[in-house]
Image (spheres, rainbow, N blue to C red):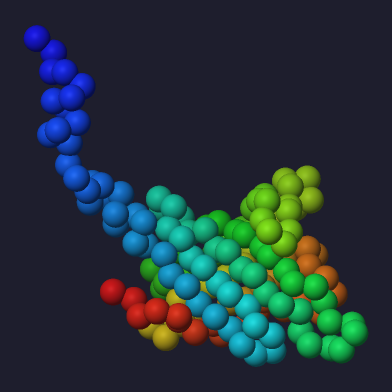
Length: 146
């Protein structure tokens, strides 16, 4: 006879499988304070990393650009460098469609190290954020890696 649903629930593990926990733990948070505050989050998604960036405009009085939000996805190479192409997303500050991005998606490069990450923006902020926005620079880790 097939086991009853109650029996299956009683024998199910109390915690999520190790693979689920490991995937959830593979993320890192970073913060930049100069020339304007910005946050970077890296989330592992299979063989690629999702790169989430939220940056304030570089201070310029009344001409300060609005906050900017971008997302990209790409693989990490043997030198711990992530090459991530901008992807469509719907966020709190910004929304990009595939049509907005077009066929030649900008690439955001993230060089990850023990103390933080260095972001190099090809043209993403210039194309999709307010004039005066900047996402490039060094982002310090906000937590210690395992």
